[in-house]
Length: 248
Image 1: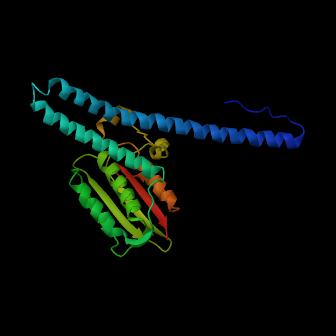
Image 2: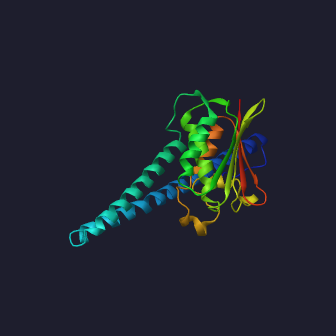
Image 3: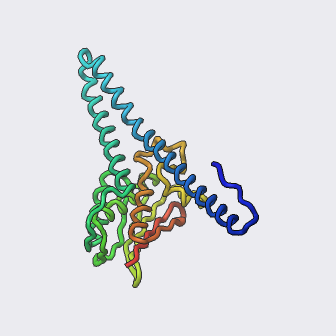
């Protein structure tokens, strides 16, 4: 990145050149993040697309003589197409292209619905402690995505026979949602990075964990949209607690 030479004198020119270089630095960082995002998104889309094309060619070459291959290949194609569709929808959410009107909703009902949905897909036991009367002005889709991605993240990185605890409470100023798992935990130096698009703390196991890798980025985006915050801390004796704070 090229920058302006900053002269010591006159002082006005010094300040202008310094400010301009700072602006260039910020713009360069934004461009680098966008380049990285495009590269990662392209990679995530290329992988299922290559698999789909491979199975189409397999059917074309051997389908007549081996009809048993067709059903297997169609299942794979359907699975990968759904994976691409999910990724595209998540990218649209992340870029703010899916917005709806704010409404007052019962948060506990949404949490229970998401728990019920995910309980059938994962083996962990999900225990809830929810204030049944809590309501909040938010789009249903935003809160569903927030809860779904936190629960799914906890399930993906926890042992099958472990427990996930979900708590929903409030004080005078904010709604508090916490999701505690019994997984391997997150290193302190990586706790901000997990909200980056496509970031995986353990790259060696990234192919074994299903998903697009942008679930927590969506969580962070939704929380910032409502001027809230999220924290990460250790769960004892093992695991991670994600806590969301949404201002009333």
